Amino acid sequence: MSLRTQLRGTGVALITPFNNDFSIDYEALNRMIDHMIANGVDYIVSMGTTGESPTVSKEEKRTLVEYTVQKVNKRVPVVVGIGGNSTAELVKELQSFPLDDVVAILSVSPYYSKPSQEGLFQHYKTIAAVAPKPVILYNVPGRTGRGLSPETVIRLAREVPNVAGIKDAAGDMMQSMQVLKDRPDDFLVCSGEDGLALPQLACGMDGLISVAANCMPRKFSDMVRLALEGRLKDAKQLNDAMLEVYELLFVENNPAGVKSFLSHLGLIKNMVRLPLVPLSEAYHRKTKELLEKDPTLR
Image (cartoon, rainbow, N blue to C red; front, side):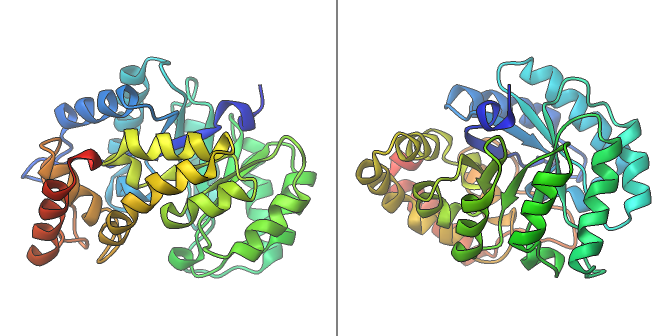
C-alpha cells in the first residue's frame, strides 16, 4: 500500500506534554493520543517540530516513540520525525531508532547550513539509502533557512526510490502546484500549513500534517475529509470558523499557541521548554475567551 493511501487525510503533529519540572508528562501524552484517535485524526506524527524535538534528548525521543507506538497500538498509522543538519549523524540515528512499527520517517531539510539544491538532493539520497522506512521530505524554509525547490522535490521523487512524499510548509502556492503537477502517481503530497490547507487540498494535495488538529481534532479532520471528497463549500464553512484559531496558534511561536489551547481544555499543563516560553498572558486569555465563545472548537 502506498503512502498516498495510508496517509490520506489528517495527520496530527503531536505536541510533547511536560510536567511542571519540564519532564515528559506521559499521563497527558496518553490522554492526547486517545483524544486524537477518538476524534477522527487519520494518523499521528511523533517528534515533529510541534513536539519540540530540538529540546528533547535522543534518549527521550527513543522512549517517546516507543511509548507512542505502543499506546497507538496500530489503531492509526504512526510517522516519526527524524531530521537534522548533519547527514552523517542522521544516518547513525536512522540505523539505531526503534522504527519497526512506524509507517514512515518525516525528515526536515538541513537547517542553518543553507546547502545548495544539489546538497539537499545528496543529503536526502544518503539518508533514504539507509532509512528502514519510506522518507517524507519536510520543506519548511521559514525554519531551516533553505527551501527545497520544486525541481529538487521532483528529482528526489523520481530518482530516489525510498523518498515517498513531502510535507510542504513553504507557504508558496505556485511551488505547491508545480510539485502537484509533476509528481509521480504514488508520491504523497501533504500540506504543512493549517491556514493554507483548504486551497492546497482543492489543488490536489492528499491531506496535511496539522498543528491545529491537536486542539480541534474533530472539526479539523472533518474539514479535511469534506475537502478531499470535493465538498469544498461545506469544508470552507468549517474552515472559516477556525481562522481565528489559526492566527492564535502561531501568533508568537509554535507550540506555545497550541499548548495554551490544550491547557484551557484540561488536557495538558501549559509548559514548554526553553528557549520557548508560554504564550503571553494577553493571548493566553484570548484563547480561553475564544473557546468560551465557540464551544464547537473543542
